[in-house]
Length: 446
Ligand code: PA5
Image 1 (tube, rainbow, N blue to C red):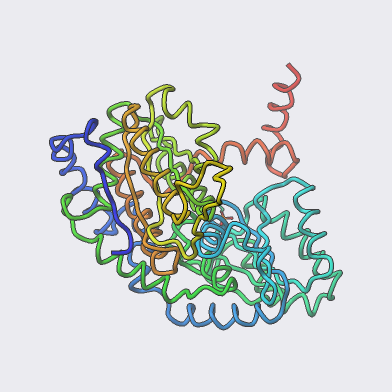
Image 2 (image 1 turned 135 degrees about the vertical axis):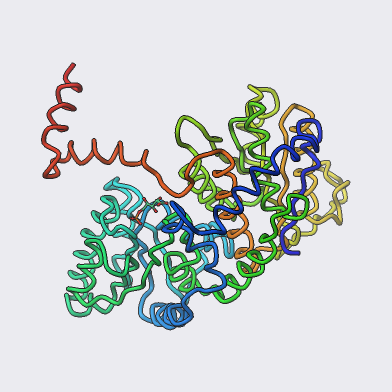
């Protein structure tokens, strides 16, 4: 087993009866997604993706990833939300949150299109000034403003560097097969493109070309990721709350929510997990936060945040539960030394591995939080490698879908995201938004 799930720190908060009461809802949710009918038909492609993904497209991804690795010193990945977080989370999980600092003979990977701040765009352009670059622009709808603006800027940057013809060979689009402005641009300009399956929404798309192309450029073995996801899809298939940890997690979240735990704190003990926690926040927030319902997902990186958020977690409002992600086997370790004078008072740790100290920090924290009234769910991952990653991503995708259905919302849409977009379109003068623009300007003048 590459990931282990444990609910010993739910004991004071959740009992067997709570789980029994959830059983029918879990069964109904299982039936709904596995029937792939109704509102789910258009959004359920991720469910069987590890089994029936497009083999040809995967080979194409590997071929182009190898080409991109040779062609450039920097890959600029343009995307936002589900078109960005999965790839970045995976690359950092498998390598380091300092990934770029370690790359000497293969491309740096920069992520843009997730911020409109000129300083951010300038920084990446400055960093790429002397580099050979490639661009992978990712947008399922092909119309999202932030990546569209970033693409406009970086296309121009690239064309000035190498000319229009060479730029054509260096721009790769990941988008819908037929729809959207990005698809039209790709077809018109002759850019190489990768298809996002129609029935896979943004935040469920990491195992499609959306995530896999940048991940493959980082040098990761994407076959292994798909294999891990395949094993997970088999392991978490059974509709049995006792045996299916993925469903148990979804049920536990809903039990806790009903008991007033309205915030889920995802925590980890290694900075390599930072972006994975960001991916989780998006997955759960966009899927569940609807109809005035849902668990608000947030995150903490330990030990860092034990010295900032720790006080609140231990003794503040008792409105959250904690889902901790830990690593069983660290790739590298450090053995602590003793010194003759014991001048730092740490000789008692002499001969101990640092990973042991980190593990004890975890055990100590989980227990303290539990004693302080914070229910805890533990997810232990064997190691930071591709197969484990595939399993983990699938575990969370499926539990999110089941959890959202237990909650009684549609986990696959995100109608609330439109509100800010409409206001922004009006304010930046997009044609068709004139009336809203006048309304907003009047309100801002008041
Ligand atoms: O999960 C989602 O659907 C969203 O977060 C989208 O991924 C995000 O809004 C980006 O959309 P697009 O890929 O269409 O540019």
